[in-house]
Image (cartoon, rainbow over all chains, first blue to last red; front, side):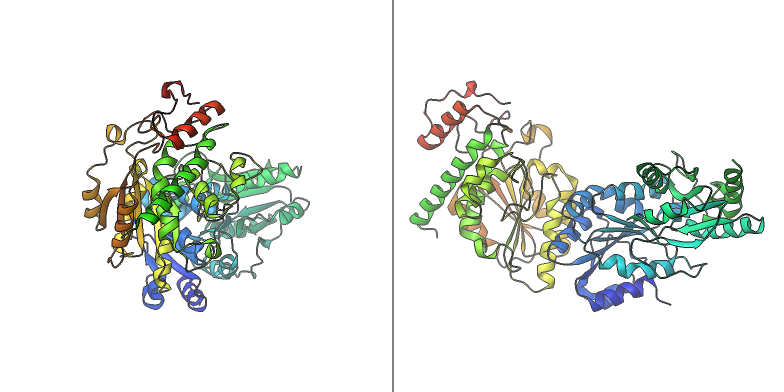
Length: 300
Length: 285
């Protein structure tokens, strides 16, 4: 099975435009110094300098793939991403590690649950959230192929569904359902798939979409589904503000599409840190809690 | 050693650049003080030092100069006009939305390598370019011109650590040490001295010179070759250099003068101190 690290190594060995950078976050790229030599650059715990240097490397024609923990990548270095990478629209590829609830026991300092919101606000920035490592590896070649900057919520958990081939900019429509359609992305697909099964067992016809990309946003699919399902439910490990629910609301209002829409997200608060399985239960994001919430939404 | 002819040529070039800059301090204004302090060192670099000419501005083997302090971009506009990289007539478009000539650098102007304006951003961008040149085995060099006030930004010092770690011998940081930041003397706000010791302690070969002395500039820039890591040249300069009526004044950072005032300043610039000018009548808007 292809892993993130093997794919990155293969890509960089085949195309010397690629430079692998990290702000001393080597979890995903531990074996690459040996194979990439001076095209592996670790700037130490300096997210800002790493992003500025990535812009400089991109100015010279390179495609830097940069690695850091999500919170520090997107927020400590935000102005460097927005100003040096974004204004120049340079092909710097951001690999964001432990986004959303995947920061589990770290606590609020490490909780990147506003990352989608702030990254999508940068003109030209593309934003992706693969559901698992299989999805990630399926999507990355196309993400890395563009000449735009991109932000990827890295998720290397094993897949629990067999994914369809990735079409750039398109969502993955996994199940159809007239009672409601769940829209989700990244890690939360895992609990959503389990919730879908439980709801099916209860006799509900629930649709499920793995968004894959938040920007570009697959509006065509949303427009189509709006005529085939009774309501949308967004599920995300992100603040309510600025994430998928906001993106969907913007799309629906802009296109004057009227459909009941509900959200499951963090409403103006940090989540309780702990073991991932316990975080999910505590925050009502485990499959059982999702089922209870979704049933109420459907009955409204 | 620089001969007399070369020295006069550089001095006259810098005078012409100042003549391009002063009119920009009207009808919207510009950061006049910072632009004038950097004119001589930038003149030296573009006229006599950098491997840069109209024909190689996009060549991968060119030298790179990044203007991190940004405010002094009128000096670049003036230099590029004198070098023929842009039409001198274009400078009249300063602040027109029909052109790209505004208060901070941008890449729509031939010769500008990167946009700036947010302080502390370009030291790291310079590092990325210097790293790539080393990876590719290039001989070209990278220069990053910074303001002294800019050194308040922590990202500068983070970048210096990384430049040292990667032994970027092709990278030179140039500090326009005019002793003022926006509103105050640097030493009255966040003292920077002793700067030489600070930079040396970061592992960088550091020189301190008179940034208006072309011979000193030539000597300092000839010393940077063959070093084993990044270097620093601190250029002691005078904010507003060339116009005694605004020199070294804390309130002459951003200037927006009336046309008659601009005419008086041009007389002062070209005919020397003692021209018919009363500084206190100048209005900063």
